[in-house]
Image (tube, rainbow, N blue to C red; front, side, top):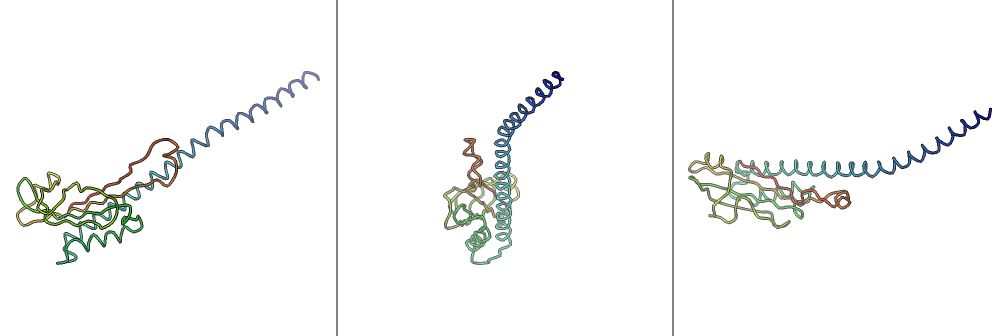
Amino acid sequence: MIKRLIEGFAWAKRLEDEQGAAFIELAICVPMLLILVFGLIDFSQMIFDNQRMSGISRQGSDLASRDAFGSEGLPPIVSALVTQGAAMSIGTQGRIILTEVGGTGSQPTILAQSESLTGITVTSAVGTGVGSPATVPANAVTVLNAGQRLFVTEVFYSYSPMTPVGGLLKTSLASTLYDVAYF
């Protein structure tokens, strides 16, 4: 009988020890799970913003290549793209640059260029200034014939994370997202 009492007491003591261990395991796992969830949210938002930027850049080059606004040139297209990017606040947190490139030979030139009036300060990867040399991919240069034009829409966006996980981990995701479309 005394032996049973001692065994029962040992069993109860073991239960108390396991409850403390479960609490410690929970205390270790919850922060890691929160970091994982917050990181997933920020990374997903960045991918979503990048997809929207891709749509805006493609639409801008497509409109320009079809001469959608006729003699008005590139500025109305840029204004329309800023309006389309209003959900992302492209007008304040981004910049759209639309460039018309032409010419033949090894070095095409910038024929026209327009950019959004407000937003972040960035430099076009294509180049700046009408009449200046344009930097475009090598395969784009080979297909440009006399009288042909190439329209390049660049979209820049200053990404800011939704959650504080970057500050907690002392790291950050890309701060400026970039997308470009050639038509």
